[in-house]
Image 1 (cartoon, rainbow, N blue to C red):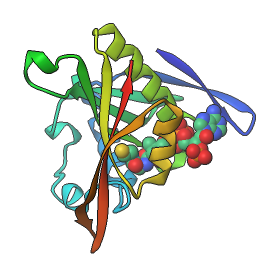
Image 2: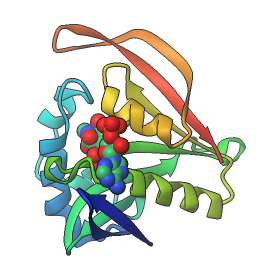
Image 3: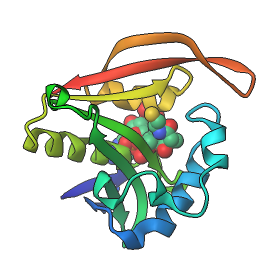
Length: 171
Ligand SMILES: CC(C)(COP(=O)(O)OP(=O)(O)OC[C@H]1O[C@@H](n2cnc3c(N)ncnc32)[C@H](O)[C@@H]1OP(=O)(O)O)[C@@H](O)C(=O)NCCC(=O)NCCS
């Protein structure tokens, strides 16, 4: 999987591929530098430990590589552990290193996830996003995701109530 990226008129090449065990350190660095209280749970980062793949293994992650450097990931998993829900895949994490943002890396990962989901026979991609995460919400909207549910004031993050939105894209 390869995707062209534009950056101020300059084109660079981002390769989208499946993660490997050797990507652990690079992905851990992205994880620790990407999230804040507008996009995720600070308590989750505090418990991260020293391995990225502690939560789920390389096989659940598409990564974007730019000039040989891993700059982003998307975690793609079954949403449900039973066959009746097999048509729905969940994007359970998407992050791009701060220095690589605004060049379409996340967009390329989302496109690859859609292709992968279709190839698995899925009919729908589903994800959660904080109402406060405007950058991510714009990105998902551009990629055809719509709000299926709003869980108002679902969480309190750094003292502020946060809506949890359920977004989905029909494939
Ligand atoms: C949200 C996130 C994944 C977006 O990553 P990204 O690689 O910067 O996303 P993209 O580059 O595909 O799109 C973002 C912006 O770049 C612009 N862009 C996209 N492709 C572009 C291109 N080829 N050339 C120039 N700009 C481009 C988009 O128009 C978009 O602009 P906008 O802010 O006006 O919407 C990233 O900000 C991040 O990791 N945030 C923290 C974690 C997070 O919030 N994850 C989502 C949780 S649900």
